[in-house]
Amino acid sequence: MASVPQSLSSYSTYATTSKSRLQSLYSDVTRQKHSNPTSYHAHVDWWQRALEELVSQGWQAENPSPWKGKETEGDEELHSRSNKLVLNARRSLVDRLRFDGVGKPLGVAHTIAELRHSNAVISLPAFFSSTVSVYDPGWLPYRIASFLVGKPLWWAMEQLDLVKSEDSYSEAEMWKRVQGDYVMLKLVERAADVVDSFRGGMSLADSLYTVESFRKEFGSKVLPGVTISEMDTEVLLKYLERDRRILVRDEDVIKFITADREKEVTVIDRGILELKTAVGNLQGQVNTIQGKIDEMTTRISTALSRQQKPIALAHLRHKKGLEEILTKRLSALQNLESTLMNVETAAGNIEIMQAYEKSAVTLQTILNHPSLQRTKIDETMDALAAANATAREVDDAIRIGGDMAAAEAGIDDVDLEDELRELVMEVERESGKAEEHAALEKLQDINVPEQIPARPEATQPVLQQVAEFIIS
Image (tube, rainbow, N blue to C red; front, side, top):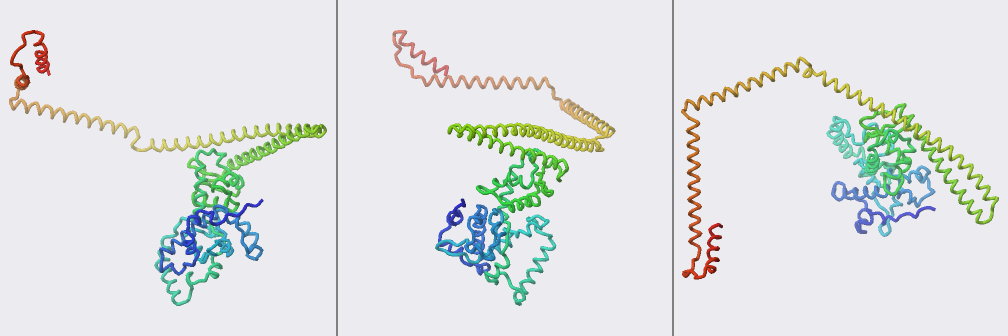
């Protein structure tokens, strides 16, 4: 059953834009490129976000052209609508972007041309044919020459009406220049980030894929809620290999690379991938056979409940045959998985030995440094011992010189100790006087009654108060 196409208003880019703003965005603002560049670039930015959202969520497949059946509507275009990373830019795009109450957008072709200039979208043939990264700015002298010579020359030719600027093309003329398939770079970057996040901790077997198994593994993960097409997969693989450089590809073999792995597909990689593919295929057969056994079990139960014993017996024979096949397949699967594990272990041992060899070479290179030769070490240690001895001699000379200077000044240690002792005693005497004076001041603050009670027990609280005050 075909899914019901989503309305444009259900997408966040449209839902968060007012109708009056949509009317402005659906108008042709090509003439504002030079007169009002801020408004013009805001217009282009909105369309970039809108197209990215629509394409990434499968809108192209859900919204066929209302002019289906015309020459512009070929099988290739119908197939390309399933793409989630590639924009199918044809004139039918304008009809599919019709919005209730606003109408069709104007100037879409000029907007696509502007996105192409800014590298936000890249022509699909150019993307595949280019040998340099999409982020490569180009050869510096060529860029300087283009800026200093090319642009002024082109402007002069425009003034003489020898060539036409893109701004002067009509919408129909511009569609002839821009129609085609375009890779949407931000969507590809987003998909590549997801694939890269799964790369950590991959074993050798996990890092090897065929194109089909790669799409099966990552096709439904790179963008939320959709599965990328075969064309999207090729675009993503090209970007990961050429621009991110996290994998290498040799025909149908794909290998994720790390710092400690070879940067090319080897015979060992192909052998491991064949084993991995065989294990996956056999696992699929096992699951299929198990499903048929479960189906036979259900049919047997149904036949017995209807008292159809001959039919139940036939189903039981079929089930027994399937169980025998399942036993053989499980045995073969176990053998293949064991073989794959042994091959992976052996390949891992090769990587370990290669790491050991590199470490040994590195260590030997360090040990061969002239500073680590035995004669150089002995010379260095002798020089260090001589420097320490010289330092001790200097220290002793300084200490002896200080003692001699003190002796010449007539300073005696005994006299110094006597003077220090007198200073300590003087400080103690001053401290005692200060404490005595403080005690007398406390006694003066005590209120002594004029008449002393006759009973001894009556004087006890007063004496106790005096004692406590003195102690405090």
